[in-house]
Length: 576
Image 1 (cartoon, helix red, strand yellow):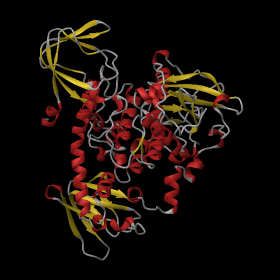
Image 2 (image 1 turned 180 degrees about the horizontal axis):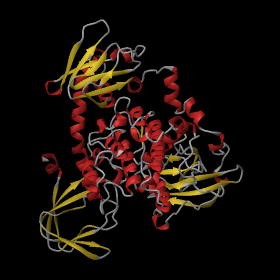
Image 3 (image 1 turned 135 degrees about the horizontal axis):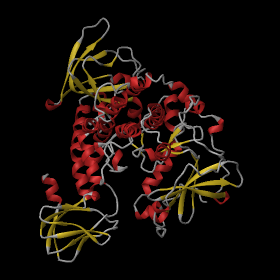
Image 4 (image 1 turned 180 degrees about the vertical axis):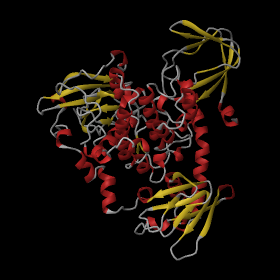
């Protein structure tokens, strides 16, 4: 709090002066009124009056968006202004201090003691925080598990066949943390002891071999390296049938594409259905104005989106066919998913409250997220609008404009407020665990017909998110026992990221074995092979049928002139 106060600047504003202006995109400051009176205006109409102690502009601290109102000084006022970037820096300090402590603990492990501080810091960030509970085995003797374990807190028992058992404690306040499994990173991966939790809970930091190799730039085994670099394994190729693959060709040229109609608009992109004059079949073309990219400082973001799409190859993820650049736009040519997005489909056909439908779409999303996370990709914008149905009714994850390659933590506050995890809202640093929280929100929305943290304004949503899912379940009547889907939501929306079920050891397998799936005789193999009948198959009359989409022209992004900075920032996109 002292650091936040020290970062604030006190400003004197004359009467009649606008402190912030509606529509302003340079929204970088949060204000607290020290003295005087101000008024809040929306479309020129008075909304409310502010006096000493009032605050405004908080949305600018949470995520990028234009100012929604104008605040004008009625009398001379004094305001405290806090910069967004400075506040984010301050909120990141606790995690960075924690990672520094992890790096210090790693220095006491002989295997890592020879590494320099920078390497140990990167390894510390790559540690996955996992929670184990009493009598649960962290690892079993002889298990093929290529991971190193650092016991951060808790009490465990190490047992070996024919050898004496010994206890191990993790006492972070005293700088005492046990470790085991380090040989599994370099040998055959077989664990030398079974480790069982004796305390009520144990916090364990886990470093898997692939992350260890990636950080230290060591060579992976042939099989691991093939998976890591090509983003597609043989299993994935078996999952993609010939009829599902778009009619792509390396000879596709941008000038050969002809627009059929609009599929939708985003905050900075237009998505159209196009056909190619030289190749059969339809494609989805996402076009982003280069002026808009530079205006919103999203160069790195659009480059990341391209890399993410090139890295993935999975039935449950929209696939990239080609990329193009023109003088004014960058474009992604992708396979089409002509069944529409889940939000539109559920609204049109009122499919809410159906466990059969929700189970299928959550399972599809699980498959897609597992594929992304195996490649260190965090989606960061999983929501109903980004879950598209193909002609067979299968769900595919789409729109990777916010996705990012992350080995450890990242801090950028982004996403859609209703789906943001608490650690994103507070800006303390987040991992892939945020995608599982979002999946819990998706499930709740499909089964309850409304999103769990819904509120009129983002700050109200964020306040609910930070309180967690339990108050929501309690007040909506879904909190009672005997409801399997709410148990799944609880497991996905744990306030502590390391306690979310898919993050825990074997968590995805446990997720698939949850009673909500087994009670429905859900066949995961059929889903993976694409032979499971979808609960809803959209009516698609032809490759150019737009009837499953309902684009709103009001959502179209503004046209922003583009002035080439001359640094060839878009060179990775083929010239169209």
